[in-house]
Image (tube, rainbow, N blue to C red; front, side):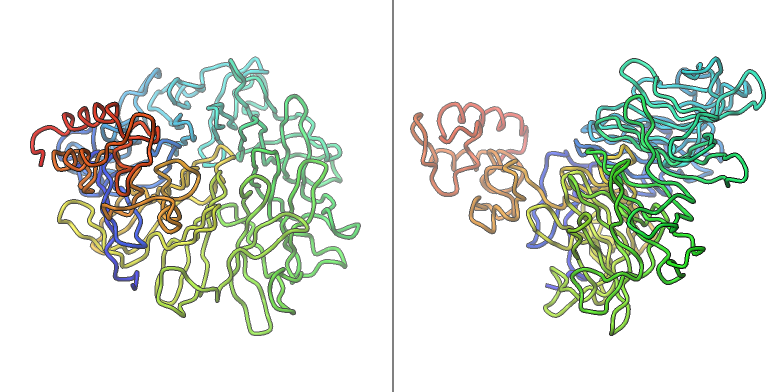
Length: 602
């Protein structure tokens, strides 16, 4: 069917239990609404409604954190208190902080709220500034427990934190919940505001890089400041830092990695570019992407001062570890997997649109290539020596009419489990396609899809907005979790917005294969027709998302011996303890489900 006119079912947590599962049409995916504009913002007075959303992130338990803006001039909302941070839970949305409200553990009210960051374990934190008139005590980082604030002594110094940078990449949180951030601190003597990067140890912040510290790999240089940091599950900290150099050496910037005590050099401006002739140096080294193994990938611009570099080949992508950096791809070089004469075009050095570490040990990037018949978009994955195309403009577009191909690829987002979501155009359809590690490739959400955002409230999708910077391993804000759930802002044609979670590849029976493949391969049954494996519909034979007396009747025909199966066809939803039989243990468990269904049982 043509997905541009499809109707996609959606669960709204404002009204329904998270455990409910919708009935879906073939090739559709479940979508859950977390919040809607023009609806009341929980934790605020009546009349205070959401206006718009941003910075949407998701943890490993499907809970969403986001920053929301409220409509002014209603419900007591003004320019002083119109922004808040909310966290999703099984019982609904919880307000975690709001401008104009008392700042936890600090003097004054919240004045500016930075972007919240949540990790896969569900720990979240956010930076904020308060209305306190004590200049060096009006900013902090909040989380489950307060981490640090400007009045705290900066470890490794005799001074206090003075400013906590608000850029998105100036703060991160590892999978275990440890944090790293960059900050200025108030020195006791000039200069008054030196800078540093702190990484959280097991008890307090111990790893620190301070202004004037020598940076390895750059002769006669001193650390200036860093506003870009990330940290993996092994607590390796990647930082992008500016540095001072002693004349005649120029100042510059580069990438370093903190692994335990030593600081390791990766690359810097005016430094030799690995894999290229002697004298070819970097002109620009932006922030990079870090994985759990300590690999880094980043795009960079080369200086055209060398005879080996022109404006047609002055960008590239590098991959590796400190001391073992390799050239992955270069502008003007042949693009693997394409027809002869096709070369890579310009590589974007903007971090939001550049290369990402992908899966356990590979990188992924999107770029334009130039071929004999013109230019087109492509996505490549791999490492040096194994680089290969993942998706090219002109490839068939799944879930659209036969003959429909991708016409352009706009951006990618990857997760820790090796899945990728691609924002792309195919024919006249703009949508999000998803590819998981088992090879399944599908259209998840498209412009002009019709969503039932509330019972009887149908809205037409117009746009999507999602974060693309994290790979799920770097401690940065996560929009795509390891369960293949994508959190994003959906814009509708009527001008409203919603925060939604798309379950790209459900694996409800946790057998390591997406539910779609279980059904397609005959591994699981779907006798009640809700497009979920029956062993996920525990106690629900008729697919109405409840355990009822009608289901109890079906249970009577499915009993096996206590010694095990085989379980009869269309009976697996009654193996509630999943031990391979349907006996009185399952009967008792079903009775509990039946009683929990309450009034209105069939």
